[in-house]
Length: 621
Image (cartoon, rainbow, N blue to C red; front, side):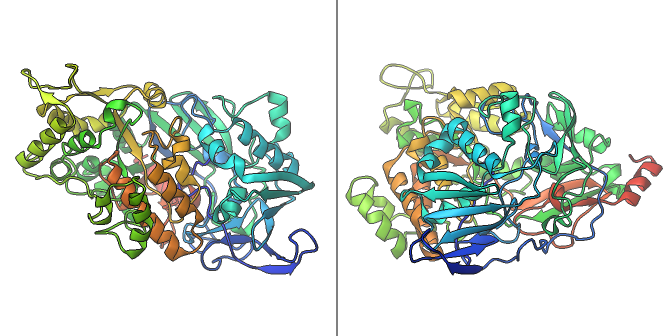
């Protein structure tokens, strides 16, 4: 359910219009507002267009992009099946977030929300003009149905976190739903949890018998600007503008959703996808390979100016992409073993030799923000960490050591330097793994240390294979298993792996979602906490972060959590990029100033019809 990095959406505290509440909140006043922010004031007024869009952007044309692998489902709310790319355009949440206002949420499918100061309840007043894709009206009955079905059939990792937060959820009018909270519900997350629901048509679900915990090639009935058009399973799909979309004339949608269609072409590997882009089979490419960005765009289409190669700044918190260990496999219990393995990934050599010096290495789950732990703990962190040390939940070194950074190596050779190799072998020996006559590490039972890295994208081979070589050089029986996307998804789900990729970067306002990423309650089965982290010190700090009610407290508590997470050693940071690399055929336009939190290609770019016609007339496309 929580599908966006910043969700559960941030909540709380912008007073817009207050009036006396007769009974609902006792002596408290009830605030009525078009939006909510925990910190500061709302940037936008009711229904006001976003300042970063072009209000006069023309409608029409198509944007086409690529995806790797295949798909067999349009249901993004289940871990069953391989979901098609881009399905979020079919649905809309109650609240909307702006790409230049990191702490606020605004009513979208609603007109206002009502809440008392203690946030014991939140009442949502829905718009009365919202319709589903088939033209039927969306009402409070549909919203209530949607909440109920997610709390019954949604991802266990989501239900385990939020289902106990609600005392009641009641339809209190044809277009009104009241959410009443238990004391256990974190105050800072309450409004945000109300806003994450994207209503489904109750009538459609009852008629079709659909379930949100099953994969399906029949998309659910939503309210979004697009519907599924033509598709060829595993090869391509197109989302087409709903000509009767209810929100087309809303001020808040001015300059947005400008394309008549959004098309995705699927490819088996990145090389084929890149060549197809230059051949014009699709027209917008978000580049993720430093090698391709550095070497592959010296082609006639770029030289002529038919294809634009652009670098856009990314103002988000770093992605924290990395390998993670499968902690549910007991052989990775010992942190010394994990540290030894971590030493064998040589980022410095990879960046210079393989990445053309274009990447930086993530060091934090909140990199580049005030929540990144640096150096030794400050006073605020020490006050949080010392009790955990006293209880034996953390080693005393957490109070005196600098925040853990990834092991550093020389760029001169792929193999880590001798000092790193000796240190890794010493750690292995301390953990009971000795080098045998065949050069392989073995435990007391004579078993070798097997380490399987799973990947589906062949682009990673040139990066992972040197890592495998380094591991084998110290006696680890390591290998890369590249499998198709369906197998990759299933093996990640079943835990049949030792190392795999995970993007662990967090948002500007960490809250309840942390439990899905790092909490013990989600360790057994989660699409986020796939490493299976279950640590009482982490749980305690997560709770403290969730309870923080002002920015200084939130930042300090998150720094302490970041420090402890990094000390756990379940993460081998890979590489990161503080920019968006975008290439596109010269028929797309965007506002002069791109907002910091989203490049917005699908959201607020548009097609220049004359430029598109010129490319076609010249034979370029």
